Every structure is written in structure tokens, then in C-alpha cells.
Image (cartoon, rainbow, N blue to C red; front, side):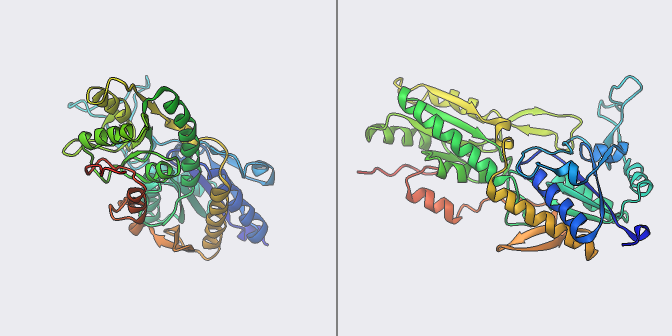
Length: 383
């Protein structure tokens, strides 16, 4: 291939980390180099790297041995929306207006100049809704952008699956197996809080796989009395311990989600968390003194560890397909999977929506048939 016509591809991993990022980088780079003869670079720390023009060449040597590893060799950052970027003064403090709000401005043109300076033909963004929103905005400013869906929450409405979700579910399921034995030994009620934001996919899948007794989802508001009934029903059947899996975005009927903190300089400022501790305190006042209630927050363990075989294959498919889209110049779109088949969808149809659990979802009914409570209905007495 004539080097003058050789495409140069840039990759960045935006938002939070997810198992499978390295697998996508590996498959995308391999396909770009072996099949199409492209050059590949990677911007470090997501859009921050693009703003600072901080990148590394990605070669055979760079990606050697990364396919199975969690995290990202390009690192992650979820604080850099270049279209709404917080300003700082010479001392590194945020610049604020007369109302105390951080002053922000659009610095995307700096990033665009960096892409032009480095001769980048196509930018591939591995990210969730926030990162892909910026990808869409760069696309509208004339940059050739392709997206790859990434989130352990599995909540992007434009695709049936996102890589990282399967690994996160496996991690939580393994943890529930360990928690089960200690809950039984001490006859405790243990509440396990998992990630997911407004979508309960991790809680639902891991709760079923990990033999939870109660699963609390953002999509199905719960009543404390129904959770108490489930614990008491298990007591009557000679099972004086219970496992409750609660998604971080779950809320009591008529209540609000539990907010852990506000990250002022982040595009996604609200951080959910704390529902396990809140629920623990509430249940201790309502159930028998024979039980202790303990909260467990799995936190970022759900993002870590080796990528599952399933996610490696899904990531490889996404990465290879993204390279195909580059060759076919199908820009302004995200790779997605529908009914098992790879395809793509324009960014305007990708961002701004969430794939939430329908309360009539088959898995909800499967769980109910197994006697799992979602805290939304009285518990049926069983023989």
C-alpha cells in the first residue's frame, strides 16, 4: 500500500473501565494492521488525551498479551467532556461565576486540530452514553468517528449487548456464592449492593445466578413490608438467613434513589450508592432480633479481573467489525448487535436513551416462579 494513502486510526477508551476494552483494542488493531494495512495510535485517558494530544503508537508489540486482561492499556477518564469543559485558574482552582457554578466552555476545536496535526483519518471511541454523545458531536463537526458500545451496566438501548456485562455478572455471582456461606453460618440477612445506575441488569442476572432471595431493581420500586415478609417466610421454612441483591439505583415505592455524592466537574455528576447501608438500617428495625443485617458493597470489583471468555469473543467481534466499518467509510455510527447479528446504527439513534428492564421481562417471571421476591408484592405462603 502507498504510504501516502495509508489510513491512520486513533482509538480512545472513554468513561469508566470495563472488562473487554483491551480485547476490543487487540482485535481492532490486529484487523486494522493485518487485513487493511492501517497505522493505529491510542489516546490516553479518553478525551483528555485527545485534548492534550497525549497518545501512544499501537503496534503488534503494544497489544501483545492484553486480550484477556481487564482495564485498558489506554487508561480511562470520565471527567472530560470537551464540549462542556470546566475552566481552571493559574492555581488549578475551578473558575466560578457569580452564582458559584463552575464556568465551562467548548474546547473541542483544540482536539480537532490535534487530530488533523497527527493525520488521523478515523477516531474510534469505545464508550458508553456520555462518551458516545461526544463522539456524535465530533462527527457533526466533520470528524470521521465510529463508536463501540462499552458499559458493564448493559443499558445502551441501541444494542442488545455491551461487552463487560458478562464479566461483571460472573464476578458478582462468584461473590454471592461466598456471601451465601457466611450468611448461613451466622443466620444473617446480607444485602449486596451492585452497580447499574438506572438499569438493573447486573442485579437481575447475578441475583438469579447467585441464588438471591430478594432482588431490588431501579425499574421495580419496592416496599419494605414485602421484603420483611420474604425474610419471615424463609424463617418459617427453616431458612433463617437471606441474601438480598440491590441495584444501586433501586428505590422504595414513592421514594428517591440514594445518592452517594456529587462530582462537580464530571459530565455525569450524580454518583448513586449507599442503598445497601440505608436498607440495612431500615430492616434491622423491622425484623426479628434473631437476625443481624449486614451491607456489602461490591463496588469496583465488578469492573476488575480477567475478561470472561464470552466478553472476549464479543469484544473481538466488535473490534473486527469496527475495522470493517472504517474500510467501508461508515462514519457517524456505532457498532451494535441485534438478535445475534452485528450491524451499526447512527449516533443520533444511539445516544440519549437507556435500555431498562421491562417488568414483564421473561427473566423477571423466571425469578418470580423460583420464589424470588422483587419487593413489590406480598409473599405467597409456600408449603
